[in-house]
Image 1 (cartoon, rainbow, N blue to C red):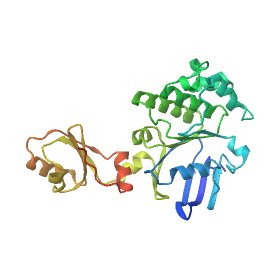
Image 2 (image 1 turned 30 degrees about the vertical axis):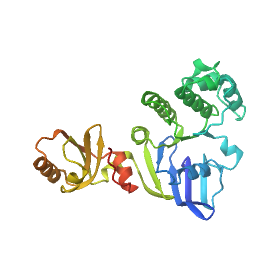
Image 3 (image 1 turned 45 degrees about the horizontal axis):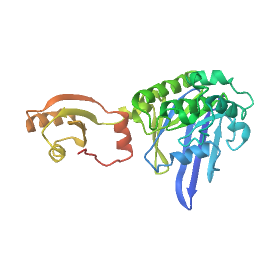
Image 4 (image 1 turned 180 degrees about the vertical axis):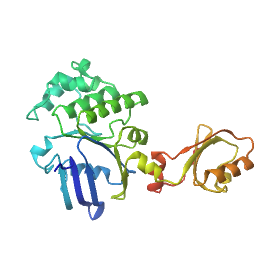
Length: 299
């Protein structure tokens, strides 16, 4: 019988009697990529620290790569890339690779690890001299050098431009295709929709939804209507089936429950509207609906 690569049951943790996680269950199959989503303060960081063995659970159980993550042997099967790396900036990339390799019983050869993250050409550069995208790829190489069964990534694309973020995402996808189990914590919902096999949404310390990106978006009754209109948010709220509206670069993006009734009323209220289109709800829509985010209107 095959066991999940990451498995948590009834996981709870509190800070000074404030419950950060409340009976969380998590199961990640081997060789899959799971995206962990949630607003700030939802409990994602606490969950990651429990999975890495940094914290001990108040109640519940957790197993990663078949063992207790608080044990050294289990931790050696986990590769980690956190937002705060703590990597010495004066060391060269090759020196960092050698340092991290010394922590594992059977590490990859330095050059192979650097090639996997496409930074073999940076081996002689000091970490502090690298660009943001180069740093993130080096940190990925360091997370891979121990040949981990499980890879935990916390906001790997944070601070990167769109091209660098997408390139890093493709490197992460390649690791999943090599059989590594990946847990990706991210606020980038487009990245999650593009990369993830499964998505888990946490809010107020509880799992409020999980499933594939397609399952989560198909569960919503809403549709997304985009157009250029002279109507403002108050006008749009009066139309039948309205859920919420966002304004982006002069266009309105409106979530509606009944697109036919809404569009009929919209055309009657503003015969001059332009660029009308209707699409299914996105993972971002699912996230905002499930976490009960308030309506947003850009200036």
